[in-house]
Every structure is written in C-alpha cells, then in structure tokens.
Length: 71
Image (tube, rainbow, N blue to C red):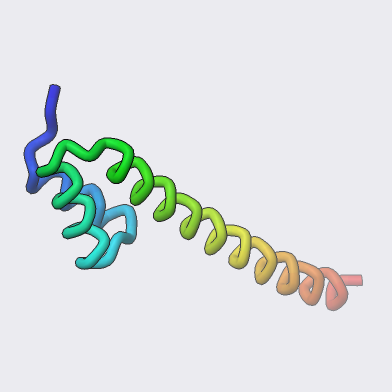
C-alpha cells in the first residue's frame, strides 16, 4: 500500500524534518530515487539519535545533582 504524498509529508514533519528535508525527500520520491529517500531518512534518524543521547547526558547530570542532595 502506498501512502499519499500529504500523509508522507505529515509523517516527515512529525519526525522533525524541516521544510527543505521534506522537499528533498519528495523530489527523490517523484524521481523514484529510493536510495536517496533512504539516505534522507537515515540522516534524520541519525540526527534524532544524536539529540536523544544529548538529552540522556543532560538527564544524567541532573540525576547526579539530585542524588547528591538526597545523600
């Protein structure tokens, strides 16, 4: 089953893609460039994982401070 273009755009926006990334993905889709689409998706995923790791590190810092006050 193929998703409609608006559904794909919405999904990309929900995944944190900016307008340029959405447009590049759609252009790849229009050309049938599956490797290009996958590259864009993988790059967005890599960025999200990096952001998640940064947040995890910040939480660890806060947890350490909280722990030091509860000793």
